Image 1 (cartoon, rainbow, N blue to C red):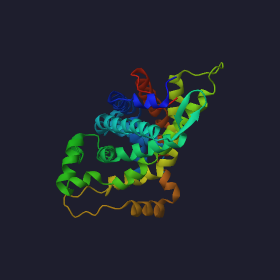
Image 2: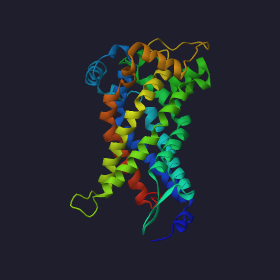
Image 3: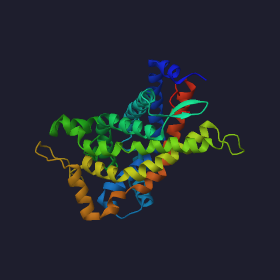
Image 4: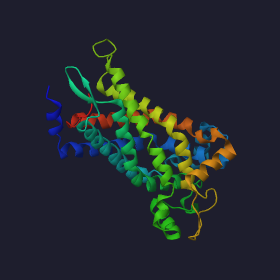
Length: 319
């Protein structure tokens, strides 16, 4: 078994590039599996027509009124954007793991060298989430605004597509309007601390089954751990997601104004309004479709990400 110094010293730019590539594939996987549920979640959270309605009611009503493809409204920004976001998120995660491994946030495994502590995995996830926020904010903003359009015909919608939406926002409010909700995005993405800590904890727990008749394959362990970690993530992150999306959709359900005088609300003011009108339970609107979507989409995304790292020889930060 090579020493830790040799392992760290042998890391190359190729390893980091593989981390970015694996993140890109992970993002595309997440879009393919989970976007329809994400549309239901956004409408449950923000559309006053659906306040107090179940996720299934929103799902059924959306298909009945607008057709099945309405579930994929706003899919274009994440189809390109989530792949880029996850490329940055998971690519930087890999780099932060390498940094922490090199700088001693490790624990000794007798006979097998060093590995990152669970706290280190969570810390890497925290900083990876913050790193991805500047890219994620405009992509998520366009997605949210397109998802909330209830008109079946494109010609009846205020925003004809992501490019038209971006052009209207920039023309009326300036370039910085694309980063509306950025503070909420930072707080939301800080919760990747819990996702990557939980993922590693689950992987280590499943590794205790090695050598028994219940030993899972690495791929199955990735699926189970990725799904469980996503449930942990959304349990902690949903209040910030609700607030962030409310900020991004402002002044919905009113039309977006065609002048530059709009005052965009702060995270604190939006959170206060949610609590005032709906109480604490208002922060958890949309949790149901999150849970339905989270396990399959994130389990598949982790499966693809970890599988590519192993296949391309870049999995050097975990044991």
